[in-house]
Amino acid sequence: MNISFIEDSCESLNNISGSICPNKYEDNIKNFMELIKPEIGEKILLIGDISSYGKYLKKRGADVTILEETKDYSKSAIVKNVNCNIVDGSLEFMPFKDDYFSKAIFLNHFNSFQDENRVFKEINRVLMNKGKIIIEESNPNKLQTKCKIITNKILGYTCKFYKPQELLNFFSSNGFIGRFEEVNNDKFIYIGSKVS
Picture 1: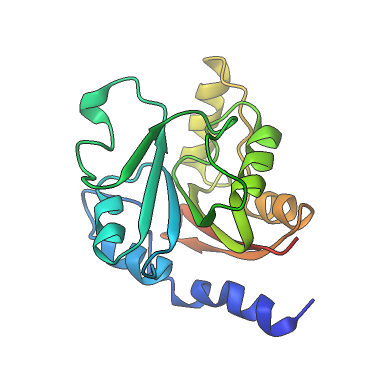
Picture 2: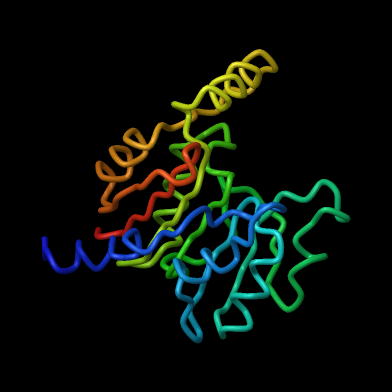
């Protein structure tokens, strides 16, 4: 494996200045854009709590697709992300061509599905070689997140909640190289590149 490729793939983590998820108390769009560094014509997949981030990527010339399972169209990404491709669909069965996206971004949504192995296969399928996956999630090691996990299990949710090291190991064993960094004491960001 080329060492410079590994360093380049994870270089963005050195520039993390805080959370990249939408937050009404902080201006995280600046952090998001500095980390993502969209390029003209680049195909980017957004999933999760994306607020109006799609339109910012679109203004920079990226080709943005937002995947969501819409139950309430008043809360849909359609409302905040004009001129973006909004696809109503499932992570387990993504309606996209193989090797289509250069980046897949999950914001507060990676621990939100029932069949993580099926989702991983789909991510691997739609992400092009040397494509990046960026994930920001609550850290399950924190007390507040542990309480949320217990509550969700009581309510019948069976999804896996990955700790940062588990996520790193999961992707590493499936053809990705990457790193994670804790941010704001209760979240982490993982950036990985597909290498096989």
